[in-house]
Structure formats: structure tokens, C-alpha cells
Amino acid sequence: MMKKSHRITALCIMLAMLVAAIPAIMTEAAESRMTYIISYSADLYISDSGEASITGYVRGKSDVTSTYVSATLQKKSGNAWIDVEFWEDSSTEKNLSIVETYSVSRGTYRLVVTVSANTETKTAISGERTY
Image 1 (cartoon, rainbow, N blue to C red):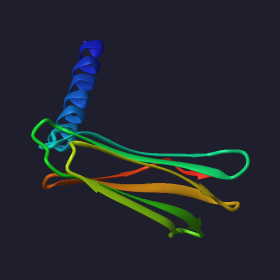
Image 2 (image 1 turned 180 degrees about the horizontal axis):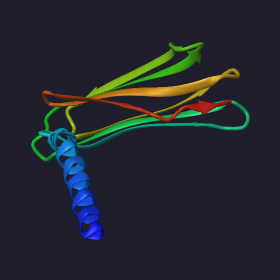
Image 3 (image 1 turned 180 degrees about the vertical axis):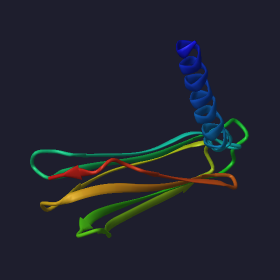
């Protein structure tokens, strides 16, 4: 009898956890459906010599008539992020990339990329890189 009670308790706990997770799952699924954008990214690599390689791109669906990409290189200062350099480009093509290099001083950096395809806008932030 005791084992059956433990199973029912465990089942109730798992069910409660699932019900609590459903709103988060639904929000993530809704956000992942994009109207005009297929994919977008912010990539940052810093070499051993302090050369930062910056890439930001947007890939639009077939009905896209305008794209925009901006990339902001940021350096960590305490708990804040300070803008170091900014690049941007726009196009009437459905795919657009920004690929740049920039010499950095010692510190921790990240790349913030904002993209648009037609009227849809998204932002991506790279992982932190330390030189």
C-alpha cells in the first residue's frame, strides 16, 4: 500500500511540474515563429593577438524586400556594457551580413546584433569573449 501511495505522490508532483512549465513552453514556441526572418546571428571571436572577428547576419524568407543589420561591439566595465564600435548595413536583398575585424585591448567583450527583414526586428547577443 505504501508503494502505491509514493507512486501517486510522484505522479502528482510530475503533473504539477508539467502544468507549471506549459506557459513557458507556449511562449517559447510563439516567439520562435517568425514572419519574415528564417535565421539571424551574432558571432564574436577574439584571436590570441586581440583581433576581434565580428559577424552579424539575417536570412529572410522569399517575400522579403528589405533587410537591415547593425552590430555593436561592447566591452564590459564593472557590471555595465560600454559601446566600443558600431557597424550597420541595409539592402533590398533577402540576406545580409556584416563581417568586420577590430583590434581590441584587454577585457571582456560581446556583440549585440539587431536585424530586420521587412517589418520584423530581432536582437541577438553573442557569448562573452575575454582577451
